[in-house]
Length: 369
Image (cartoon, rainbow, N blue to C red):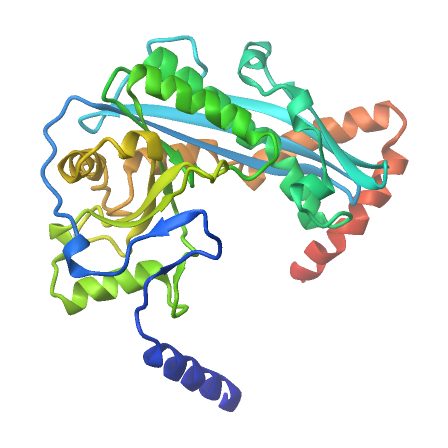
């Protein structure tokens, strides 16, 4: 108890001594906006006929190993208008599942990863990424080869690329000019070949005048005094007595033209006066640069109108819904595991696979004690 008390005192003293600071980015690919009370923008009631589409994905490992990973992947989307769920107009599957097999091999002095994908239903095939785009090296992806974390990162490529591909189809077949699509997470690419799919989405969005946005559940951005950026903005609002229901967004940074991996305007949004926190929010830069403050505020206010769920006020209900249906739950995995293990036994290789599972499962067994 003494050590806990002392650590708590150190933490309290450290945080209380830090000033708010300004947004901090550790490279020159961003132009940031300093903290100033003048940059808070007021929320308005949104009277609009815009449709809002929400996209999310999830994946979990069916078969772990140090050298390969079999994953169950799921993508889901929904469309709302004036807080009412809309029926789909096209043949896009609202909920799509596929299996992926990611493996690593040593070749030409580097670890090479490749992923094979198989849709759970044949009709999902046209919405999946090209397997050639799922090939990469540890050096290109900047992952630590031979680690479980590295394998998990590479195994997530298939799900991420599928999210982008189905997003393009949603824009093309379900949305109209002025509508909004919100992805769960940032608009920043995280893999070598991901930009191909992102550029297709951005191009289609510009053609149809559909706004591409992203909202992140978590935000690790800090200020140059190493204080949480979101906490700094909320504290500034408190100090300046800016009511939470009187501002909807605060501009943070713009990615420069040299930044190919992240084409976005970054802001912090507070979408409901009862929200427990603000969130990181992004708009595709090529669209945001042609918008004035009033137009951005109208777009964000339209999203805020979908953020009145009593369980998580300030977070879009459409993303709560998408997370619910995209998440791969542990209990759902058992059926897939049973059938996969049965097929491996039938093929006579279960005795080779089982020891590899045990290698990476020991930690889980200890956690369960």
